[in-house]
Length: 138
Ligand code: IDP
Ligand code: MG
Image 1: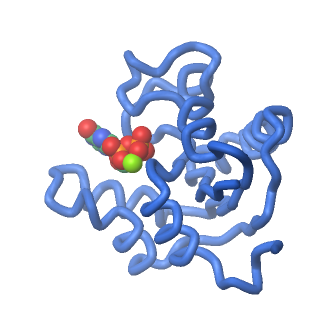
Image 2: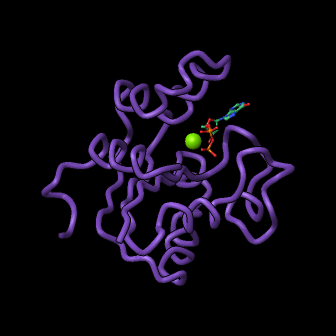
């Protein structure tokens, strides 16, 4: 069993795509073990995207992800990290295949609706960053 941090970004909440995204994860058979709606604090967003802090888009990215409410979630299942990344689709709009969340609902490289952890180590760090242990099912 594996856990992954998934977040509907402010554009996804604003566009009323939260239900559609939840439905896709439920249909795929992953188990929801944590869920909350919040406007991210700047420090949380900066820590979440720390790996990108030298990138030219970093400041805009932090601005974007703190611009409104997000839906923070933890999903559990066998190979949950890779399965979620597959469902989310590629970062570059041209590479985001139809049938993926990004490929079906966005063509913007930054406002791309959803985040998903990319590896077991980042999943663990992101879950700890966004959730207290008591907020997650066991
Ligand atoms: P990922 O979300 O698919 O893992 P990353 O490369 O980790 O993609 O980038 C994190 C986030 O930064 C992306 O989801 C997107 O919102 C934003 N981003 C990535 N590349 C660019 C870019 O070239 N311009 C603007 N924003 C970008
Ligand atoms: Mg990433």
